[in-house]
Amino acid sequence: MVQEACDRIASLIGTKEIPLDQEESSLPGFRRHLIGNFFLALVAISHQTSPRGRPPLQGTIGGLLRRGWDYLFARLEEAAHRDPILLTPERWAHLSTDDVRQLFHDPELGDRLTNPELRAELLRELGFKMMAQGWSFADQFYHYCNGRVAAGNPNLLKVLSRFRAYEDPVRKKSYFFLALMRNSGLWHYVDHEALGPPVDYHEVRGHLRLGTVRITDPELLEKVRTGRSVTAQEDVAVRRAVHDAIMEISNRSGLTNPSQLHYLFWNLFRSICTREAPQCFALKPDCTLPDRYMHLVDNPGGRQCPFSSLCPSAGSPNPIWEHVFETDYY
Image 1 (cartoon, rainbow, N blue to C red):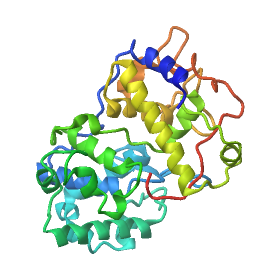
Image 2 (cartoon, one colour; image 1 turned 120 degrees about the vertical axis):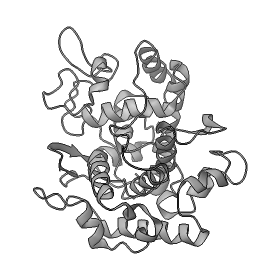
Image 3 (spheres, rainbow, N blue to C red; image 1 turned 180 degrees about the vertical axis):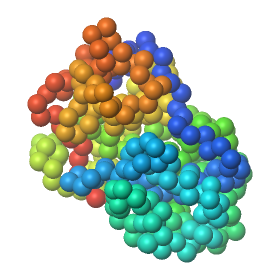
């Protein structure tokens, strides 16, 4: 984490109206207990939707082209409306690879979901372990832990880490799931300050470019620059540095909500600060930034990244990418 860069970004954010952390859909028509299960299952398999060297996960749903998380969300929402049993541990425990592949198949683009075998395995393990504990709904975790994120024993982070899909030491999926439950108005935490930002590869790439995180180890930097795979320890170190930078910016900006700041960074980085062609000074007409963030990119001279005046990588012909690490954590 680079303190000076974090301070500059925090000062800018402190002058802006930052949208609330929320999803594009509020899952209308689903009962409360099924919304929890919806998020628990979906976050469990939400990783590597824009793999290097392969087409990104995307497809058309309801006449709209959706990518990555948005596609996963909309496709599962559509399927669960038809068959609510899809949102139960009993169903997860018996999902096959082909079930998962078909669930996220797009009629036009085909099968873009990578490694459906592993995703099916993660869901089966989630289902079997929940049944073994006598749990049918995610809400039961919340009551079992008395609404504690990290304090006391049991707490939600420890309970989630029992599942293979949620054992990441940097807790990307755990933080994401807990934020979704809070942002949906379903759960409220007694130690809400313990809810950190879920860090994924878009945020790693963006913060390396912003300079809020700097890789000082020459060997690790060379790995990142050349696209060589890093070790598990290096992966954790980089993501923890990004986590700490987001926490610092959240506190210094006055926002004091890491999840809200995560949504800001995540939406900007995945829509604007893309791997191959970041839109630093001019957004493309087909930019996928959600409408609620558009006021941040509007300038008298046209739409551009809100961080372009502070970003040392803005306009660079060869901006750094995120590190390479094969994982299902993010």
